[in-house]
Length: 140
Length: 120
Image (cartoon, rainbow over all chains, first blue to last red; front, top):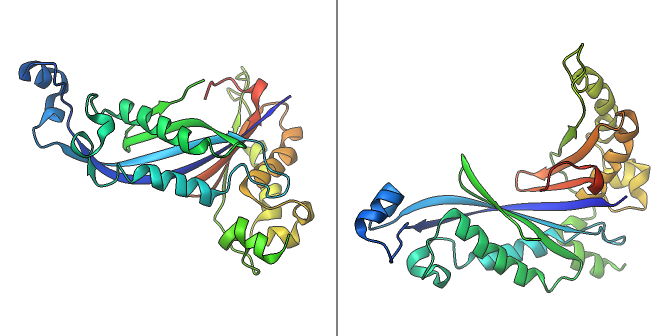
């Protein structure tokens, strides 16, 4: 029987965003997104939890070195931390920077960077927008 | 491995005099609710099984004072597995998941894939 081994690291970042669909009327945007459609955006302290799976290396006792995971996450978050996602991050030029979409974009960026490490793979991205709200994203 | 190789891989974790964490262990049991007691498992009994294992590790230099870690790195991955193997036989096949938090920002999980009812 196979054992699952997972490692999760958390990291905080701060960003602002505005919920606005360019293809919709102002009325529809306000009706769907409410306060989140405010013209100047608003901010959150996001908490990102990245879970990786893999085998425990017999010599190091590790799935992945936490320093390596930390630097992968830090590099990816450079384009997110203290940024206005709609304005400063090209991934959100044509999609609304909802928590769901941010989690999906982060999955792609993290998966690409982790591809350099053949011993572990991305298992789940959990993104907290506030303490009371988070999105889980994974792909099979 | 040489000192250089160890420092290359383990960085500050290879400090000769070790370093400490406030670990927290979380176990998940799965089972039927006993109609008489209304419980899946007695929390008192669970404490009685967990406490000696925690007692053995608590306030110890794991790589020096715990024989198992003489030949295994005392990483979060290996500590989670160690605790799993210690408590699993005493829990009537109800243990399905272990989570070991090393800091408030990192944790390790260990479980049998075929015996875990949740997708992720």
